[in-house]
Length: 534
Image (tube, rainbow, N blue to C red; front, side, top):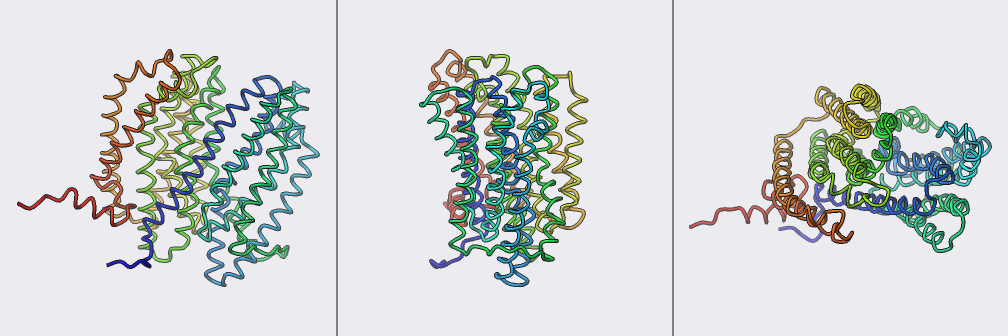
């Protein structure tokens, strides 16, 4: 008999925290998607839009790499190790010193970048060298956006402190707040009217305001557990952070480097960069939901485990949870690539040829989704141990595979599809290298239940494919471009909901979710499938 004070099972806690972080990330991505639509409507596709979007590349890179859990990998394991060895006070001193010294370093970087803004822009968009007017605009917008880099990086480091203490919600919701502020500014600019340059200036300034809001939100949450005291004294702990931090960040950024290579491949074909961009926006929705959650929650949970048995069990649960969500998402994206792209994008200047090109790229991306997530989970083992060398090697290998495969396959199909396929091959190689080394080094000992769970997930996904294929043909007329937008969106929603329902029921009955379901639900399933006595 369980009491009311019974501790929450680790599997339930892992699933709950992962879903919280994933849902907050999805909310941020959806708001970001709406933001991009409004930016296109407000700025168009002229030199002002080119300048603004080029200037936006640096803040976007910082936000995606650091603001969505990238700083967790170097900071959280070291913080928790200090806390376990020397107590909470020493850990808080380390956090305060890290934030203070990172802030000074960033302040120097921002000052230099403000002075040399045109050269920063040329590093991001070298083609502007022949367009002095666009270059000047981009440098102006960059100067307005640079405070964001300082503010959001500090917020990301302090959010890593929250994650280390098991406080995930506020840190996960902060990026959604930032996109909401930008959306409000965009709506204000749309209702106000005016020229594109004035609107872009307003947006660039508001971007730095979102960085301030991000930092304020994290500081407010830290008040509940105690703010770390600032400190400028260099320590051996800071040396350890610097020694492993750079390599860890680079290893954690491997997926972004792979996508950068994919963009270079797509740039060899006319219209392919746009197709790859739209496909990547859809691909990032499930990847963000799972990947950011895995890199935030799982890292903190692993850092708190002390025995190999607990570590193996947690890694198995994390992989099962991730694949239980990623495999059906990848399956749906592959089967429904054309309807998804058509409903979301096919309108106006986005033609049927654009739809086919983007759908092919999305289907190619879908093939790599489960492996991208598995690589994220496996990488946490090394980051917890502060051993980023193997993830760094696997990341470089993935980038090399993307480049070699992409340029070798050019001309076989559309460049956007080749770029996405190259990325998927890179994710497969990255996950494979990490898994093989984990097994050989004895850092992971899979249990029979892990293999049985993955098999059940695949079987449930196959059942979902059968249902989607059976439903797709009767709904083709409802998805036709000539139908009203709400009618088409409703037909797509019916497909998605039916597929999700079939997968959920089949997965529950087959045991695909046993590793993460609460025990009371497992007992309920056992009762539902038990053969009644005569």
